[in-house]
Length: 258
Ligand code: GLP
Image (cartoon, rainbow, N blue to C red; front, side, top):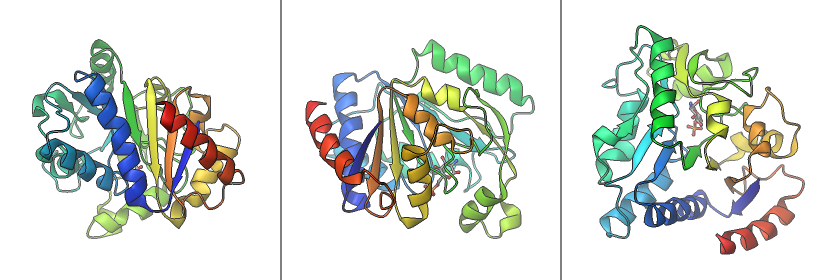
């Protein structure tokens, strides 16, 4: 696991975007795993700038998103499909047909989740997975207590997550209580993983994920077992890390070798 610590979230987002841009240049047909939340927004803006400047093209890229609220249609302004269209897909040259988000209205959620995993496998697996992190250390919607071997499934959200995400809805009662989410096992199969974490509110989660034990109580900690996982943090999110100076120095070398 490499930890890149930057002064600002803009700087961290640019560095993470550069890693994605390098992959897209090297392999224009790559498969991306994408994330929602406020955290990846500046990174998506940086990628949109690259497309506008004709530095990269997503014309042949395929994407699968991590998760979707269960019960929300993709047209709902808080659905993750809506978010992805507004914050990335409508701003780059990706073909909409090549973008995949779980169907939050699927009646047979087991069938939906199984088919989603099969689609990813058929596409050759995810080359690079983008992640944010919940304040309790969750990735996608793998809440504390999720098996580290979990696959795409229906999950129940914790009170903490509902509280954290209530800021996007009119009132807390409007936040869906369930979601469809890739599992920790699904995520860890990606060839490369980029996790972004910004702000003080994420410092405990980052500490537990990077320096705590590998545990289902902080599902991001499973990334300690991944061979190519990168955390891009601002100084606030990294503030509780014991070895932050060492990580910063080591990551500099690793980044230059990428
Ligand atoms: C939700 C999403 C996660 C995201 C998290 C943090 O729970 N399912 O993928 O990482 O929110 O969101 P934010 O980046 O807004 O803090």
